[in-house]
Amino acid sequence: MAKIFCVANQKGGVGKTTTTVNLAAGLAKVGQRVLVVDLDPQGNATMGSGIDKRALELSVYDVLLESASVKEAKQTSEKVGYDVLGANRELAGAEVELVDLERRERRLKAALAAANDDYDFVLIDCPPSLSMLTLNGLCCAHGVVVPMQCEYFALEGLSDLVNTIKQVHANLNADLQIIGLLRVMFDPRITLQNQVSDQLKQHFGDKVFDTVIPRNVRLAEAPSYGLPGVVFDPSSKGAQAFVDFAREMVRRVGSM
Image (cartoon, rainbow, N blue to C red; front, side):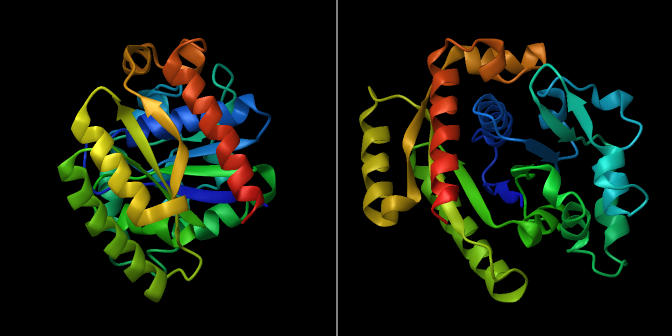
């Protein structure tokens, strides 16, 4: 049975997509069967997994409107070792179309249930706003992985996200919880980042992942080649950190 995780943070530019595709590639490297669901109309997770969003015949848009199944719409990216349920600009229209439909916030849950046995992990890349798309992701997830930079404004955004998760947990998905906070783009030479990191550990305890993703040029370069950093340059510090993170995720999920 697949474990479904949203990678979410209501603050933009914190590395959600980078985390999603690199965690997926890391999990594939350690022998897990992985599906990435791109719920962002920008389609960055799709492109970053080696798939051209402009050439998609079927996408997550078709799955949400129930005109295609996950098995029909998913693409297998041989280069990265995992499957992708891709997104493109069409998905922006789904926001409007879903409003009047029945079970509007549970459509992704129903679609993924049919593919449950095909994967060990499903990772959902959510847009940075609390939209109907994000709600679909949160309603079907077992938990949320929160990538965050160790800086002051990131803490502000985190409190908003925690409140959102509490509301969804209370009203729509009793399984939903924060699986862990992942410190990304971390530079230990910056005093403020170390202070914020310490604050996170004091406040959230073992909800903070042990693995820390360093600030790394190769991770930043990889999307322009349509690859996760784990595949683009496996020897880089950032790639190695994500493979370590994948192993930590497998261990943590095993103890859930």
